[in-house]
Image (cartoon, rainbow, N blue to C red; front, side, top):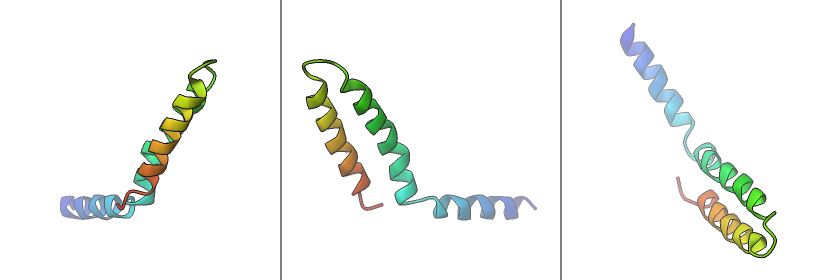
Length: 62
């Protein structure tokens, strides 16, 4: 019974690869960038930098 649980967990982990894993990283980055964009002078620059980094994470070949 324990081997079935391990195989089920392994197959679940393999199905959650790729796009789903990059979204786990990039969505909080984008939210943080939106929060930082409120800062008057450097907010938009920081937001654009964070958004570019999030785009790079989305395009990562996982």
